[in-house]
Length: 88
Image (cartoon, rainbow, N blue to C red; front, top):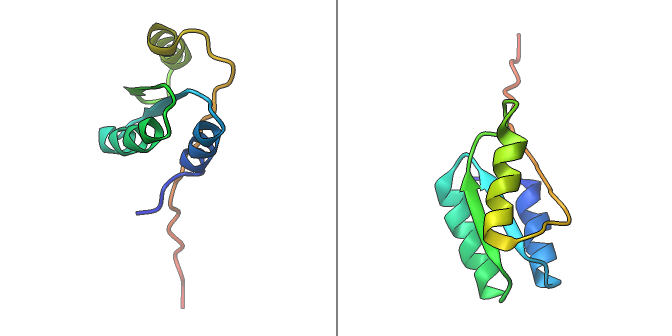
């Protein structure tokens, strides 16, 4: 399974000492990311959520503030596999 580019960015930021708040629709992805980030000795929080919809940003902002306090940067990414149909 291919991981999203956001995960690579989060891990690089954690390696530089930044606290990380992850958001994904997939809890297992967040558990894996959390284990890696905590191993680096920085703060971590997460939220299982869908980024679609008008309330998503408010929900994410409130959850990250409750867990980590003020947040300087939000990074989002979405990996989507596209199927290519080949016609003969």
